[in-house]
Image 1 (cartoon, rainbow, N blue to C red):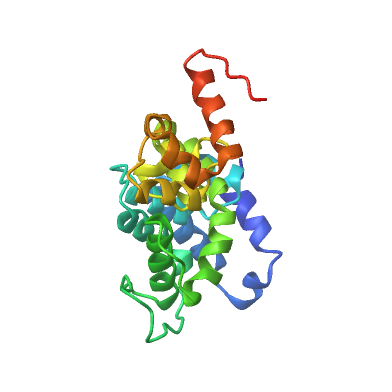
Image 2 (image 1 turned 180 degrees about the vertical axis):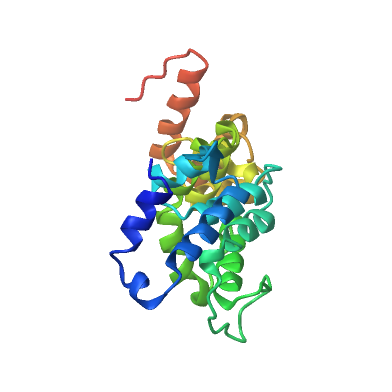
Length: 239
């Protein structure tokens, strides 16, 4: 792990050293901030990475972003709005951006980019259609979400919570539908269709066979039924 002297030697070779006369003061201020946030720790003058610092380094995420995200998710929220605000509030997303007047039910945040990301994520997690002005921000974020959940796991957030959170974020469903999207053959659209017809749990699928067949189609229904039977220790033959 790099120590203060190593960092100073590295920074001395960068453009920042030419632009600033007191680069050592800047480095010390940065180290003090990281210590205060417990991203690094000072053990008798020796700098060590904390769990958050190691997670940020291993998963190539901003350590300060990760610190803010860990704090926002400390209570393990599962509601779309709170989760959306937690991710959007990371400092790296504090970017002035134009927010269209026709944005529906926006989550007002300090910066336009944060407002668009929070609103889009909220809609995505709630199972709503994406708005044109938020889709271009939300889609790349979702593609990278596994990296963030991995960093959170390394930093100490419970894995059971993160498993549900990742299912929600990747599939674009609220917590109530995570049980359905874990079944092969059921994605966001089918899970929402089932939910809108009163089928909210795995056991509801076979209890409402005719309705489930109409929604899923015969082939997918049989595929899902095989998975459910396998979990019960039954064997289903499909001819």
